Length: 143
Image 1 (tube, rainbow, N blue to C red):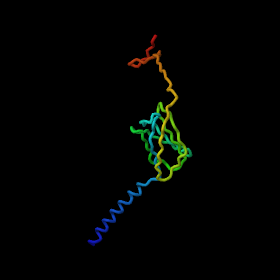
Image 2: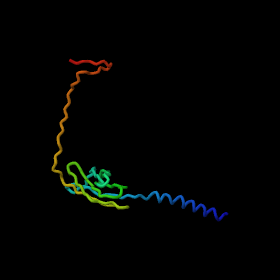
Image 3: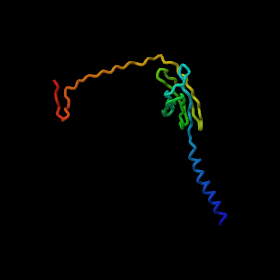
Image 4: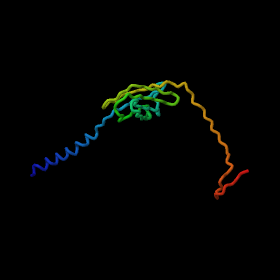
């Protein structure tokens, strides 16, 4: 009986360790890379969007302070299109990426300066309110 107790303890520890490894496996892939501007500097805060052209699945992220992005647990399949954009630098789209189990694909972007100018939006307001509600709750007509 004394000999079986350590054996049972070791078997229990092995059984507890096995499910953790099975849960850690996923059926997905990763995309990562760097977004640079027309001057070669990295662009923190650039938008990176991916879209599976076959299913319509879309997700995205924003680059970190070093201009890097990473999208984990991207569903398998494809083709995927990947678009990077930044205000004043324009946008660039790359197409035709197919993801297989465990792929870690690097996609870097070098955005060129945008020729487009941002539009000016003018907002004006007027104080046109012929019927106002007084603090007491009675409508008051202004002449």
